[in-house]
Image (cartoon, rainbow, N blue to C red; front, side, top):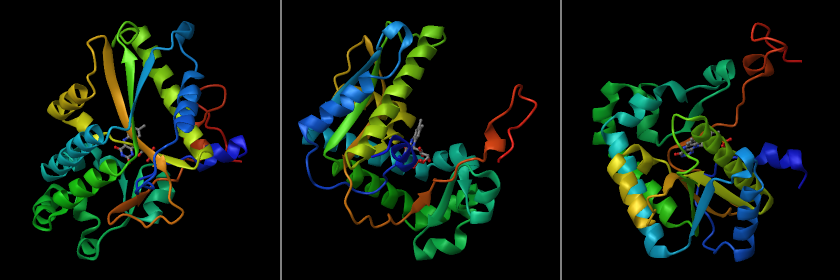
Length: 261
Ligand SMILES: Cc1cc2nc3c(=O)[nH]c(=O)nc-3n(C[C@H](O)[C@H](O)[C@H](O)COP(=O)(O)O)c2cc1C
Protein backbone atom coordinates (compact mmCIF):
# COMPACT_ATOMS: atom_id res chain seq x y z
CA UNK A 1 0.00 0.00 0.00
CA UNK A 2 1.14 3.55 -0.66
CA UNK A 3 2.46 5.17 2.49
CA UNK A 4 0.05 8.11 2.40
CA UNK A 5 -2.84 5.77 1.73
CA UNK A 6 -1.88 3.84 4.88
CA UNK A 7 -1.89 7.07 6.88
CA UNK A 8 -5.28 8.05 5.51
CA UNK A 9 -6.75 4.60 6.17
CA UNK A 10 -5.51 4.30 9.75
CA UNK A 11 -8.40 4.26 12.14
CA UNK A 12 -9.74 2.74 15.32
CA UNK A 13 -11.48 -0.62 14.93
CA UNK A 14 -14.37 -0.86 17.37
CA UNK A 15 -15.94 -4.01 15.94
CA UNK A 16 -15.00 -7.69 16.30
CA UNK A 17 -11.94 -9.29 14.74
CA UNK A 18 -11.76 -12.55 12.85
CA UNK A 19 -11.41 -15.62 15.05
CA UNK A 20 -7.94 -16.25 13.69
CA UNK A 21 -4.59 -16.00 15.47
CA UNK A 22 -2.24 -13.22 14.41
CA UNK A 23 0.73 -14.95 12.78
CA UNK A 24 4.05 -14.83 14.62
CA UNK A 25 5.52 -13.19 11.52
CA UNK A 26 2.98 -10.37 11.69
CA UNK A 27 3.41 -9.97 15.45
CA UNK A 28 7.14 -9.57 14.98
CA UNK A 29 6.66 -7.13 12.09
CA UNK A 30 4.50 -5.00 14.39
CA UNK A 31 7.26 -5.08 17.00
CA UNK A 32 9.94 -4.22 14.44
CA UNK A 33 7.83 -1.24 13.34
CA UNK A 34 7.52 -0.15 16.98
CA UNK A 35 11.25 -0.41 17.52
CA UNK A 36 11.94 1.81 14.47
CA UNK A 37 10.39 4.81 16.25
CA UNK A 38 12.68 7.62 17.37
CA UNK A 39 13.60 7.90 21.06
CA UNK A 40 15.78 10.25 23.10
CA UNK A 41 19.42 9.20 22.61
CA UNK A 42 18.10 5.98 21.06
CA UNK A 43 17.14 4.89 24.58
CA UNK A 44 14.21 2.81 23.27
CA UNK A 45 12.39 3.09 26.61
CA UNK A 46 9.38 1.06 25.42
CA UNK A 47 8.61 -2.53 26.29
CA UNK A 48 5.71 -4.58 24.91
CA UNK A 49 3.85 -7.69 26.00
CA UNK A 50 2.19 -9.74 23.24
CA UNK A 51 -0.70 -11.58 24.90
CA UNK A 52 -2.26 -14.60 23.22
CA UNK A 53 -3.02 -16.62 26.36
CA UNK A 54 -6.82 -16.97 26.43
CA UNK A 55 -7.13 -16.96 30.23
CA UNK A 56 -5.20 -13.67 30.43
CA UNK A 57 -7.20 -12.14 27.56
CA UNK A 58 -10.45 -13.15 29.26
CA UNK A 59 -9.39 -11.70 32.59
CA UNK A 60 -8.47 -8.37 30.96
CA UNK A 61 -11.74 -8.50 28.99
CA UNK A 62 -13.69 -8.85 32.27
CA UNK A 63 -11.82 -5.90 33.73
CA UNK A 64 -12.50 -3.86 30.57
CA UNK A 65 -16.21 -4.72 30.59
CA UNK A 66 -16.78 -4.14 34.29
CA UNK A 67 -14.86 -0.83 34.17
CA UNK A 68 -16.95 0.31 31.21
CA UNK A 69 -20.17 -0.61 33.03
CA UNK A 70 -19.08 1.26 36.16
CA UNK A 71 -17.91 4.34 34.28
CA UNK A 72 -21.22 4.64 32.45
CA UNK A 73 -23.47 3.73 35.40
CA UNK A 74 -21.76 6.19 37.75
CA UNK A 75 -21.94 8.96 35.17
CA UNK A 76 -18.18 9.46 35.24
CA UNK A 77 -17.77 8.68 31.56
CA UNK A 78 -20.24 11.33 30.41
CA UNK A 79 -19.01 13.86 32.93
CA UNK A 80 -15.42 13.48 31.80
CA UNK A 81 -15.98 13.16 28.08
CA UNK A 82 -19.06 15.26 27.37
CA UNK A 83 -17.01 17.95 25.51
CA UNK A 84 -15.99 15.45 22.83
CA UNK A 85 -19.45 14.25 21.85
CA UNK A 86 -21.17 15.65 18.72
CA UNK A 87 -24.77 14.85 17.95
CA UNK A 88 -25.27 16.16 14.43
CA UNK A 89 -23.31 16.41 11.20
CA UNK A 90 -23.76 20.18 11.42
CA UNK A 91 -22.13 20.37 14.84
CA UNK A 92 -19.33 18.13 13.61
CA UNK A 93 -18.85 20.19 10.44
CA UNK A 94 -18.23 23.34 12.49
CA UNK A 95 -15.55 21.98 14.79
CA UNK A 96 -14.38 18.93 12.90
CA UNK A 97 -13.18 17.24 16.06
CA UNK A 98 -14.65 14.90 18.65
CA UNK A 99 -16.82 11.91 17.93
CA UNK A 100 -20.22 11.89 16.25
CA UNK A 101 -22.76 9.55 17.80
CA UNK A 102 -24.61 8.49 14.68
CA UNK A 103 -25.92 5.08 15.68
CA UNK A 104 -28.11 4.40 18.69
CA UNK A 105 -30.68 1.66 19.37
CA UNK A 106 -34.30 2.71 18.61
CA UNK A 107 -35.47 3.38 22.21
CA UNK A 108 -32.56 5.72 22.82
CA UNK A 109 -32.76 7.71 19.61
CA UNK A 110 -35.28 10.33 20.78
CA UNK A 111 -32.91 11.14 23.65
CA UNK A 112 -29.76 11.45 21.55
CA UNK A 113 -28.92 14.93 22.71
CA UNK A 114 -29.92 14.51 26.34
CA UNK A 115 -27.96 11.32 26.71
CA UNK A 116 -24.91 13.12 28.00
CA UNK A 117 -26.78 15.09 30.63
CA UNK A 118 -26.79 14.08 34.30
CA UNK A 119 -30.60 13.83 34.12
CA UNK A 120 -30.39 11.05 31.54
CA UNK A 121 -28.41 8.77 33.80
CA UNK A 122 -31.52 7.29 35.43
CA UNK A 123 -33.03 6.58 32.03
CA UNK A 124 -29.83 4.95 30.78
CA UNK A 125 -29.74 2.75 33.86
CA UNK A 126 -33.40 1.82 33.46
CA UNK A 127 -32.77 0.82 29.86
CA UNK A 128 -29.78 -1.25 30.98
CA UNK A 129 -27.34 0.73 28.83
CA UNK A 130 -24.34 0.46 31.20
CA UNK A 131 -24.66 -3.32 31.32
CA UNK A 132 -25.09 -3.62 27.55
CA UNK A 133 -22.06 -1.44 26.84
CA UNK A 134 -19.97 -3.24 29.45
CA UNK A 135 -20.91 -6.65 28.06
CA UNK A 136 -20.29 -5.54 24.45
CA UNK A 137 -16.87 -4.30 25.48
CA UNK A 138 -16.05 -7.49 27.36
CA UNK A 139 -17.00 -9.60 24.34
CA UNK A 140 -14.93 -7.47 21.96
CA UNK A 141 -11.82 -7.80 24.09
CA UNK A 142 -12.41 -11.49 24.90
CA UNK A 143 -12.83 -12.26 21.20
CA UNK A 144 -9.56 -10.59 20.23
CA UNK A 145 -6.76 -12.97 19.27
CA UNK A 146 -4.04 -10.62 20.48
CA UNK A 147 -3.63 -8.00 23.18
CA UNK A 148 -0.67 -5.69 23.22
CA UNK A 149 0.48 -4.05 26.44
CA UNK A 150 2.77 -1.03 26.10
CA UNK A 151 5.12 -0.24 28.97
CA UNK A 152 7.94 2.16 29.76
CA UNK A 153 11.21 1.57 31.53
CA UNK A 154 10.97 3.60 34.76
CA UNK A 155 14.65 4.54 34.55
CA UNK A 156 13.62 6.72 31.60
CA UNK A 157 9.99 7.33 32.44
CA UNK A 158 10.33 9.81 35.28
CA UNK A 159 7.08 11.83 35.31
CA UNK A 160 7.66 15.56 35.79
CA UNK A 161 11.12 15.41 34.21
CA UNK A 162 11.96 15.94 30.54
CA UNK A 163 13.00 12.31 30.29
CA UNK A 164 9.47 11.33 31.33
CA UNK A 165 7.99 13.49 28.60
CA UNK A 166 10.46 12.21 26.00
CA UNK A 167 9.64 8.63 26.92
CA UNK A 168 5.92 9.19 26.46
CA UNK A 169 6.57 10.93 23.14
CA UNK A 170 8.73 8.01 21.99
CA UNK A 171 6.17 5.42 23.09
CA UNK A 172 3.45 7.36 21.26
CA UNK A 173 5.48 7.25 18.07
CA UNK A 174 6.22 3.54 18.52
CA UNK A 175 2.51 2.84 18.95
CA UNK A 176 1.67 4.90 15.88
CA UNK A 177 4.14 2.76 13.90
CA UNK A 178 2.33 -0.36 15.15
CA UNK A 179 -1.02 1.20 14.27
CA UNK A 180 0.08 2.09 10.73
CA UNK A 181 1.53 -1.38 10.21
CA UNK A 182 -1.82 -2.96 11.14
CA UNK A 183 -3.32 -1.18 8.11
CA UNK A 184 -0.73 -2.77 5.81
CA UNK A 185 -1.37 -6.22 7.34
CA UNK A 186 -5.19 -6.15 7.10
CA UNK A 187 -5.44 -5.84 10.86
CA UNK A 188 -7.29 -3.53 13.22
CA UNK A 189 -6.41 -2.12 16.64
CA UNK A 190 -8.32 -0.49 19.49
CA UNK A 191 -7.38 0.96 22.86
CA UNK A 192 -8.65 -0.94 25.88
CA UNK A 193 -8.62 2.12 28.04
CA UNK A 194 -11.55 1.72 30.44
CA UNK A 195 -9.53 -0.19 33.09
CA UNK A 196 -7.07 2.74 33.17
CA UNK A 197 -9.85 4.94 34.44
CA UNK A 198 -10.49 2.85 37.54
CA UNK A 199 -7.31 2.56 39.63
CA UNK A 200 -8.20 -0.82 41.20
CA UNK A 201 -8.91 -2.29 37.74
CA UNK A 202 -5.61 -0.96 36.39
CA UNK A 203 -3.73 -2.43 39.35
CA UNK A 204 -5.38 -5.77 38.59
CA UNK A 205 -4.31 -5.57 34.91
CA UNK A 206 -0.73 -4.98 36.14
CA UNK A 207 -0.99 -8.03 38.40
CA UNK A 208 -2.39 -10.19 35.60
CA UNK A 209 0.47 -9.13 33.31
CA UNK A 210 2.99 -9.55 36.14
CA UNK A 211 4.42 -6.08 35.52
CA UNK A 212 7.64 -5.75 37.56
CA UNK A 213 8.49 -2.70 39.70
CA UNK A 214 10.94 -1.27 37.15
CA UNK A 215 8.29 -0.97 34.40
CA UNK A 216 5.21 1.25 34.14
CA UNK A 217 2.19 -0.09 32.29
CA UNK A 218 1.08 2.71 29.94
CA UNK A 219 -1.63 1.26 27.68
CA UNK A 220 -3.33 -1.90 26.47
CA UNK A 221 -4.66 -2.56 22.94
CA UNK A 222 -6.62 -5.33 21.28
CA UNK A 223 -5.64 -6.43 17.80
CA UNK A 224 -6.67 -8.89 15.14
CA UNK A 225 -7.48 -9.33 11.48
CA UNK A 226 -10.43 -7.28 10.29
CA UNK A 227 -13.38 -9.18 8.74
CA UNK A 228 -14.48 -8.15 5.22
CA UNK A 229 -18.03 -7.42 6.45
CA UNK A 230 -18.18 -5.08 9.40
CA UNK A 231 -21.64 -4.73 10.97
CA UNK A 232 -21.83 -1.60 13.10
CA UNK A 233 -22.05 -1.97 16.90
CA UNK A 234 -25.41 -1.16 18.55
CA UNK A 235 -24.10 2.11 19.87
CA UNK A 236 -21.59 3.55 17.46
CA UNK A 237 -19.77 6.71 16.51
CA UNK A 238 -17.69 8.19 13.73
CA UNK A 239 -14.48 10.08 14.26
CA UNK A 240 -13.04 10.43 10.80
CA UNK A 241 -13.41 14.21 10.61
CA UNK A 242 -10.27 16.25 10.93
CA UNK A 243 -9.85 19.95 11.58
CA UNK A 244 -9.26 22.23 8.61
CA UNK A 245 -5.72 23.64 8.19
CA UNK A 246 -6.88 27.02 9.51
CA UNK A 247 -8.11 25.34 12.70
CA UNK A 248 -4.78 23.86 13.73
CA UNK A 249 -1.90 25.27 11.68
CA UNK A 250 -0.32 28.73 11.92
CA UNK A 251 2.15 30.52 9.70
CA UNK A 252 5.35 32.03 11.16
CA UNK A 253 3.83 32.85 14.54
CA UNK A 254 0.79 31.71 16.46
CA UNK A 255 -1.00 34.87 15.36
CA UNK A 256 -1.61 33.85 11.77
CA UNK A 257 -3.75 30.82 10.96
CA UNK A 258 -2.74 29.03 7.78
CA UNK A 259 -5.41 29.52 5.07
CA UNK A 260 -7.30 26.34 4.20
CA UNK A 261 -6.26 26.44 0.53
C1 LIG B 1 -4.97 8.27 24.68
C2 LIG B 1 -6.06 7.70 23.81
C3 LIG B 1 -7.07 6.91 24.37
C4 LIG B 1 -8.05 6.34 23.57
N1 LIG B 1 -9.00 5.53 24.13
C5 LIG B 1 -9.87 4.88 23.32
C6 LIG B 1 -10.78 3.92 23.82
O1 LIG B 1 -10.83 3.65 25.01
N2 LIG B 1 -11.62 3.28 22.97
C7 LIG B 1 -11.59 3.54 21.64
O2 LIG B 1 -12.35 2.94 20.89
N3 LIG B 1 -10.75 4.47 21.13
C8 LIG B 1 -9.89 5.12 21.94
N4 LIG B 1 -9.01 6.02 21.39
C9 LIG B 1 -9.05 6.27 19.95
C10 LIG B 1 -9.66 7.61 19.60
O3 LIG B 1 -11.00 7.66 19.99
C11 LIG B 1 -9.53 7.77 18.09
O4 LIG B 1 -8.18 7.72 17.74
C12 LIG B 1 -10.10 9.09 17.59
O5 LIG B 1 -11.48 9.15 17.85
C13 LIG B 1 -9.89 9.23 16.08
O6 LIG B 1 -10.47 8.14 15.41
P1 LIG B 1 -9.63 7.19 14.47
O7 LIG B 1 -8.54 6.57 15.31
O8 LIG B 1 -10.58 6.15 13.95
O9 LIG B 1 -9.04 8.04 13.39
C14 LIG B 1 -8.04 6.60 22.18
C15 LIG B 1 -7.03 7.40 21.63
C16 LIG B 1 -6.06 7.93 22.41
C17 LIG B 1 -4.94 8.75 21.76
